[in-house]
Length: 503
Image 1 (cartoon, rainbow, N blue to C red):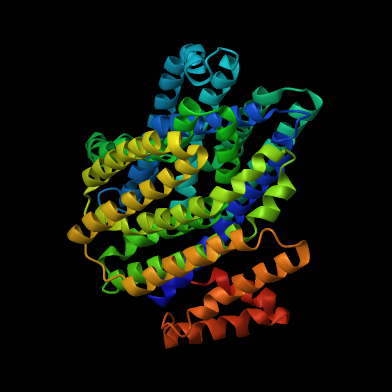
Image 2: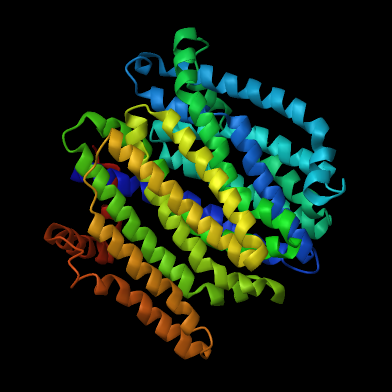
């Protein structure tokens, strides 16, 4: 199991580099997006709506093909013809993207009318649709790189795309005054460039064969996941749609800024962990130490995430004031801890749901997501009129808690794993107290404020010692890690050893 954990940590770090780049680019653009010189507060709110519209469209266009490819790539029924499986998957995705884009683009004006009460953003929405179709195809190529453990190729190609999009976006906005349209012109160009760069890799790993029986089996597996994917995206974006329809667009802007900050946690940690451990979780399913591995993965990822949630919550006041030039958006600070804690349950759901995947009970996943999405809609309708953006954040937190609890209960019933409940509850309880402690410190002067926040942050892992959180073997591993990586002179050798970690 130790080797599997090391592989998971290694791949998480590698994918994390790419995901950190995603957030760095996003954070670099926030001062531009919130600058009154180029965008109004309402423009930033509109951008938030366009971003979540793109997420919904990508979920629809991508169907469940990335998950089906992941599930069957190492399956005995397809392992002998992986190139044929990939060819079948990517050609299907291209066909789906082309057909749905052709159907949706003529409706761009209607979408603009629904979202913004006018057709002014019709052309921007057309670009959003095209970008989403291309991104759905990119997702298949990205999935193959993960399945083949081509982590370096994965992050290098995606970082190159990100840098290109960043440069083109800034040029179009600053030099060409292209506004919102410029943002999505850059996205379309970046997605096309990505496909061109990896065209050779894509062709090399394709073999023009179509296995009808396997395709039918993948659809049976994937169809419930299609509904789950769309509902999951709806669950993640329904908050901003509800704010847009029930409150002012400036509240969408405030919520979008808070969401962008806390999404650092999801993209850099949760998504990196998911990218790294997905193939390993399926490979280990038949091994005797599988359930202990799953239990430790939940605990360790929850620990790493909670430390990050506390850090983001403590220093959100300083970060928001540094990246935004608009006073109206500073109130985003007050909902960041709650949104951060909701991501704690997102991660727990992402780990525990593998039990249902292993026993192929994907219909349960679909049903749970649909139910949670409806619950989220009801919570937003109930809470937004009372507390506007704060009610929206609370609805998001409760929805993610419900989502996790339902997935956890069904997964444990079908595939029981002995998770360490006491330690998980300890993490959440103390983490919540430490996260909200930022509100007690934000009124202090800069130097004492930063000093006290650093002290509070450093105290969190120490407080866990007397409460029995750490096992002896874990403490020994931490000491060994510090000894190994604390010696800077051996850094080159230590980096080389990461390559040799095997399962």
